[in-house]
Length: 274
Ligand SMILES: Nc1ncnc2c1ncn2[C@@H]1O[C@H](COP(=O)(O)OP(=O)(O)OP(=O)(O)O)[C@@H](O)[C@H]1O
Image (cartoon, rainbow, N blue to C red):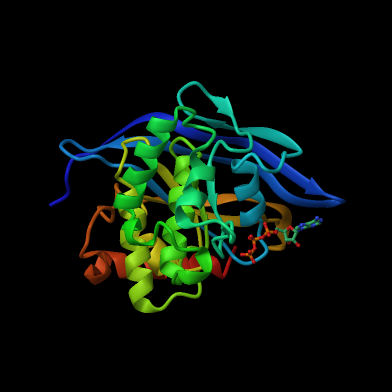
């Protein structure tokens, strides 16, 4: 039986974003939004899965959402007070979890926390809180080269969460991981999202099943077709899936549900035509 949920304020809005590079139209009129979702009796952040064929423009939109790339026109806003995207507005967890190699885990988190926590005592408390939450205390004096892939990823996520408010963009968090690690990372993403009501995680991935299994909403990027059936230039968010509405969010047994298999097949079919 599905629990109650309510969509509230818009906390991220992508509005009419266009991007032209050279003479190539990459993105055309991209519109998307994330709404704060609440569930009675639980703390629920948001997880958006962002899918689409290779080369369609996911990374470019990701960079625009992170405030790292200026669109040719259009805008991205964060929060109720509609702050325009700017570098640092969202934590960005890159695929290979780049860390400062000559700094310990503690040192890496110090860098992440430096901007948001000027008071030394408060900063220390926050860092130790994150070391505990991310099960990194035993490794606080280790260097990145001494950590496993999963541990490095946890450091990278903790570091990005310390330097941002509530938004985390994750690029291909499942790639190159074995099945156990994919499960571990999936659980961690859900846990992080649910640490705070306003946390929002956007995952760009080619792994449709792992992404859909933990998302509450999915965005599918693609291009429109002209009358002859040829793709026009410029991609947009062509389809969105509300997994709450479909009763396919926040469920641990999700992979066993026939409706989930149906959803995956539906997305796979759409992919051929994006
Ligand atoms: N500087 C550039 N000038 C012109 N075109 C570019 C430039 N940078 C990227 N592109 C093009 O922009 C398109 C979108 O690239 P993007 O990296 O966003 O795709 P993607 O969906 O993230 O792909 P993948 O899933 O393979 O990572 C691609 O077709 C690419 O060739």
